[in-house]
Amino acid sequence: MKKTSFGAWLATFVVCAAFWMLITLSLDPQMLIAGAAVSALVALFAGRFFIHESPFHLLNPKHLFALLGYALLVFPIELLKANLDVAKRALSPALPVNPGIVKVPSKMKGEYGQAMLANSITLTPGTITMDVAEDEQGQAWYYIHWIDVAEGTAEEQGDAIKGTLEKWVGRIFE
Amino acid sequence: MEILRYVSDAFVVIGIFFAFAGTVGLLRMPDAFCRMQSSTNISTLGLYGAVIGGLLKAISMIVEGYELGWTMLVKIAPIGLFSILANPIAGHSIAKAAYQHGVRPEKEFVCDAYGEDEFDD
Picture (cartoon, each protein chain N blue to C red):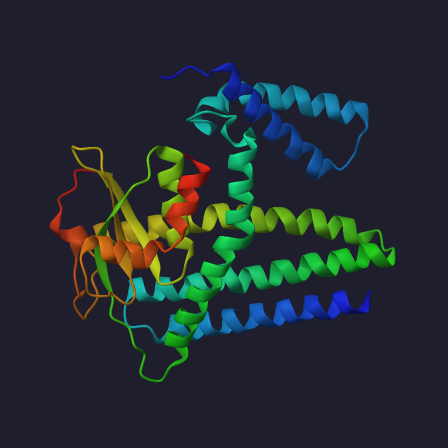
C-alpha cells in the first residue's frame, strides 16, 4: 500500500480542520485545539485515500482561475442547456427519446481529470457515464448512456456530448 | 433588500419547475436508464434552484440584520457542495450496477457499445 506523503497529510488536515471550524462556528481555543488534534489523527489515516495526485496542484493561480471559471460560468451554462433539453423531452407529448450507449474517446490524462470529466458528463441531464476504460495505448474511452443518440463517428459523438467541458477540465488539470 | 428576496423567490420557482419536469419524466420515460436521465433534472437544477434561492434568502436576512441568516448560510452551502460531489457518483454507480445486473430496456438500445466490449470486473 502507498504511504501517506507529507503533502497529502497536510492537505487532508487543512480540509478537515476547515470543515470542523465551519460546523462548530467558534474561535474558542479549546475547540480549535480539539479540532486540530482530531484532524491530524484523521489525516494520518485517510490522507492516502483522499489525495492521489499532487495535493497542491490548484494553488497555481492559472489552475485555480480555470476551476473557478469552469465551476461558475462554463458548467452552469452547459447544465442549463441540457436541463432545458431534457425537461422539454419529458414534457413533450410525443416523448422523443432515442436511447443508446456510445463509446467515445477522451484526451484527458490522469485520474483527477478523467474523474472530473466523467462526473461533469453524468451531472449533465441526458448523459450518464457508465464506465471509463483505458486501452493498451493508454487512450481513455468513456461508455456513455445517451438519451438521444446522434449519428456519427465516435469522435463526432464525443464532441456533441462533451462540448466545451473537455477543453476546460483539461485546462484545470494540464 | 427587497429586490434580493424577489430574486431568491425566482430561483426557487425555477427549481420547482425543473423538479416538476423531472418528476413527470420519471413517470413517463420508457425504461430504467431514461428514467435516471430524467431524475438528473431534479438533482441538478431542481436542487440548485432551491439552494441558490436559499442562499440569497440567507444573505438578505444577514443584510437586514437577522443573526439566523448566518446559520442558514452555513447549512445551505455544504448541502450544495456535497450534493454536487456525491450526485454524479451515485448516478454512475446505479447505472453501471443496473446494466451489469442485466437490466435492459424493452425497446432495444440504438447502439450498445458497452455490451460489445467484455469486462472482467
